[in-house]
Image 1: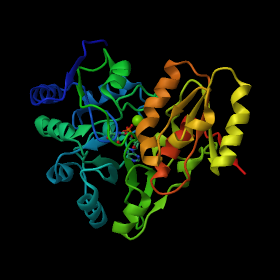
Image 2: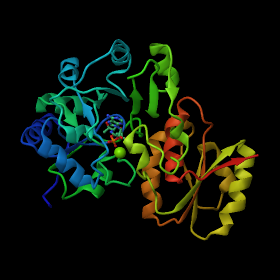
Image 3: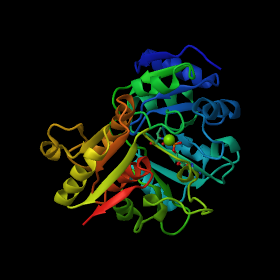
Image 4: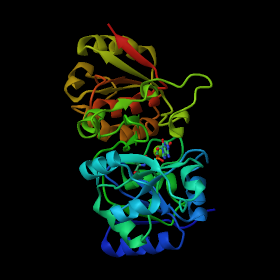
Length: 341
Ligand code: TXA
Ligand code: MG
């Protein structure tokens, strides 16, 4: 199905119109602090089915339900003590909590799972849209399945023109990678997908927190994914990508050795290392892990546009807030991580 897509600034009038579209069962892409979402009324089975169709997303991958207040949370799921503490601390913000769902949430939304992922986004346009719609909004990232998540309205337009009624433009997304997905069903919370809310931050509130070990490695043949999203191929640029880890000097040595081997190569460099790659195809990829997260998806799209078939990326030490960007880089590189000694 193709339709005319309206690309519009996230003004009050346009948000009102977007709310009407959602209430009528249509699709609206909207900005959040993490990435753009592709939204529909989470309680409307038909509308949610259309999200999967528009993205080309496998039906076994559940959607996150976005809420604007605590009353809406209670409409869709049962909230534990730990979950409540985490909401009080991190909402609105980039934290998705997996909680037992209530009857009224359609099976399509949760891909048949007994839990629902809920989050309150930290973006005024997103919150206003949910409020206008009067319903929780189910929204995956607004990219075609297999493309990097969109961090600008232009990215969304590239992927979704003709597939959604409206795209609300709220500018650049502040965080740039998707929310932390946290399982809070057991005594100790488990991070299924790392994001800007780190395991350390969760532990400071919940007393403890672990990270699913499939976060930094590919699933083994036949291994069950803790979160369905992990088993699907993700964020893949057309070029073959390698991520280098270790001391700055050793990483540089390895990249300089690899660079001449293929003609159409580009380096993603820490900003303060640019000088070492003078005269080569190189792009600044941030001065720290947070900025790197902000830039990564945009850079990956750019690599495709410029037609690079080899991408050599300087990684970040695997700890704290770097876990989120390294998880995405590892996936983009099909887990080709080189430890440089
Ligand atoms: O920041 C974000 O989370 C963005 C913005 C739009 O809010 N949304 C987003 O949605 O990244 P999506 O659909 O691209 O990723 C949701 C991830 C998937 O990996 C999915 O498998 C997992 O969350 N997930 C959702 N509900 C789940 C559930 N009930 N149990 C386990 N994993 C779940
Ligand atoms: Mg996604």
